[in-house]
Image (cartoon, rainbow, N blue to C red):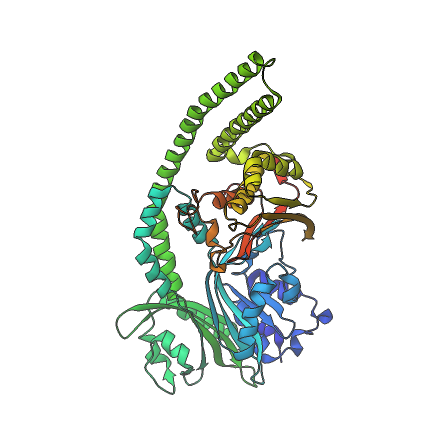
Length: 555
């Protein structure tokens, strides 16, 4: 078996696969690989659609140039090639491994749409969203030997929608008007199962499985002929496709193309067909074996989403401009009364120093301290709301001091709730102090606000350092014994203006946790939540220990 034929082409990943030292790998050299692995790898490398393969019990990995950009820089590429899945993806193995096991156990394909699966890339842990399908790949003996991932990264699309949600409430009403449209899109996005075909190059006969027949809009039949299929497939770039087909057959190479397929009802579906030229015993091209992938839903979704985002971008910009102007005006209006409170309280302290009681002096000091904090918070909110907030000065921040400031500012509320706050020693990190204060203020305030009735509040803040991809991270967990929330809200809880309880029961704007997420992401980290009704809530923060270039990240 000439394995080199199957590993031809494939761009950068094809070259890396051929140059890989397989002698030292458990899979052995390509000439010892099973035919099913060679064929699958050949199709993946030469496809222009993002694909990824896990093979064997240890889930050894292969991927193509189209998938390569999703790995970013300073991350897993090129070490992911040939690596065990568990070693490559420790940060998400608990998420993806059950999906793989489901496919390996029964062969049923899976489908996930816009799923949040953070991965380490570009020197940091990033929130990455994916739309993907896991399909079984059978070995030469018919057993399930691998899992093929056909995927598309939708991070930009999802972030565009998230940016829209960060606008004020009047903009949310526009999104609500489009709810029915979003539901139609969700119904349209169904799993694109793989079809398979075998094309006899000598007779022109084509044998398709049921899924391939559906993809190509063919009537039920045992076999088809090339002349029958020509009238169904689109005319676009026909000569170019014909030349590519002939070249693949002549050079015993891979053929891959995207087709528009006319359906019986006159509709058009978009299908990617990729096939590998197989030779007879004399070394002459005998047949082409390959797969088809229906990408119609992805095409339509991308087009509609692009239109929707374009229509909303102008409105978002106007809304953000209004918010920025509002922040400046509000800051200016608030500064003056706060300044007067500070001035008159200082004069009161001076004029009554000799007659003011010890308690009176203590209370007046509290007033002045609170005034200083309000003034600092106004400045911070103004800077955070403006376009230049990402350029805030990065300093060495003592998180222990930040927590203590929060406790001092919430002293009365903590006493009212009979709260106990346990804090492990927190390290110093590089960041914007006022923004990190806002994060812990909101998290602790939430724990106090959503406390159980007649139950003293217990809040725990624990931290530990961990190293991943030669970079140090600080993991902080904030837990409480409050009312908790349903697990289905683990992600929704961070959406701007989202409320899990009625306004009458709990006051608030619904912006606190959205602000926390935005600040943590500006610091290059992530924040996730986990809750159970009646069992409390837990918030997990992951922050880089140092900030590169002394500047916060843009969102």
